[in-house]
Image 1 (cartoon, rainbow, N blue to C red):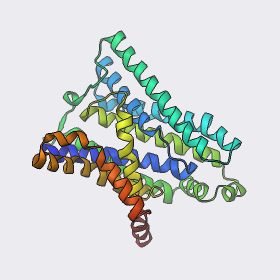
Image 2: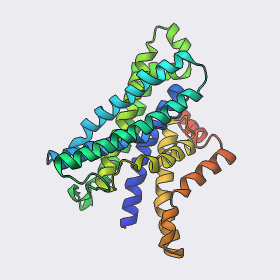
Image 3: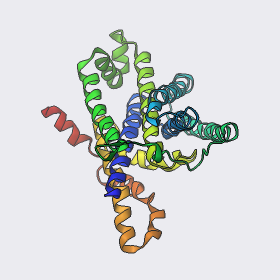
Image 4: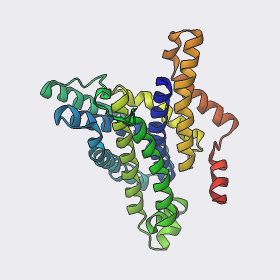
Length: 301
């Protein structure tokens, strides 16, 4: 039962992260390697709210959303947008996101050391699981993470297909030049999208802090799983990324547990191989991932 709870929580958190990664890729056509750092920033917002302000970790969600969203917006507006004007190549943009990720890891390490030195709070390999509450005899993180994923699906559908801003966003993503001809402020749309992407990462980070161990270097370990979920989902399908995140999340936890029970718990250390296997298999055998299936389902709806 515990392993199923862990798998469900991890899978839903991964889905939220995959949506943010896919959203920014659809806009710039460049994978954001700094995306998981926004989640770790959200983890530390949860740590600050819980340990320093002595409040429930879930109260950190608004702050994590804003701080991580603002950081993501900074990356786009002051780095990627400027590079896009200077070069037609995507390689400098990819290098820029990698460089920003390294920069973020440094900032997170400084933040962790500052929290420990100034407030005598453990800021590495920490967990806030003891601060979680029970809802219907179940951990609140399980119910809230599932609810967040469900709200994300419904909210994205409503925003993209039922609002004027959603229509502008879809138009800007599909054909930026045509959108500008119709007087759509594409830069505003892109800025909001990047802010939303970072905010989702920060929200996922709060959930991570409640149930899993937090550390500045966790972003490096999360990155392959998030990319695997997005690639399995098709990398251009927002709804596909949600399903892909669920597939990778459940597979990582349940497959590793199954193998460990049969071959020994030494195999747990090889868990990161699973997302890489999904990435390789999908790219070789099914490059479009789940996007085609999701597209057909959307057309029927």
